[in-house]
Length: 62
Image (cartoon, rainbow, N blue to C red; front, side, top):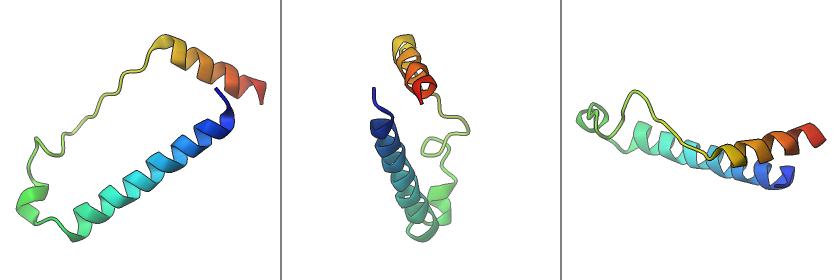
């Protein structure tokens, strides 16, 4: 996995977060923002161990 791909993916996620933030701030009513099923306190991600290993190796190479 190349670092460039990681940066592009990170930029994509950052842009996605900005869009979601804008939607939450400007287009949602307060009653929508209070719905716990829409906005949980914690979000868990799972990633296979081999993907983490590849990412660590790619970071160490640079």
